[in-house]
Image (cartoon, rainbow, N blue to C red):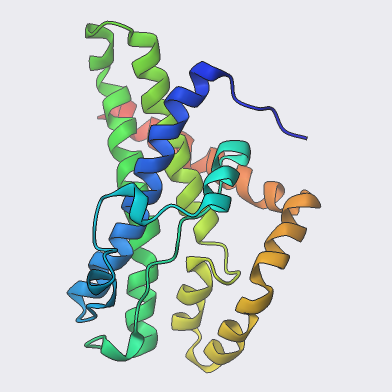
Length: 208
């Protein structure tokens, strides 16, 4: 079971999700472009326009469960100016890394407490905390080594001898994720890690 967000929560949640998913996919495309692949740019995906990146099902999952996905950025490994598996590892890491940078920035703004100086401070606090939380969730969720999540491509880069097998599992990836979700195993993996990372970020922001 899950609780639907209230209208006020939804009004804060929607822009955070849009921004978080957009920067995640943009980072993939930017890294691929930096490594020599123009595929994302040529298909209009090297942009911060959320409409270019949103997947309806993944977006709905974000609203209901606070984890989901956007449309994968197209990348041609053969265009990368490096070993294709190493290149895909870097491209795949870029999305979660972007989310962690956003989460860190939000946590630092919370630590500085400047939101207390503006009207509707409670809403600004919640918006910053939600931004941190959503981006940590996105980063950790996408690092799960189940295709088509980024973690599977990272694992393929770390275990090049097993990359063909890992990529062959992509056909069953969504089914595996749904099984993990509805059996509760996904939550048991995800939420402790999310809580740990959020607590670390809050500790850092309080120290700084």
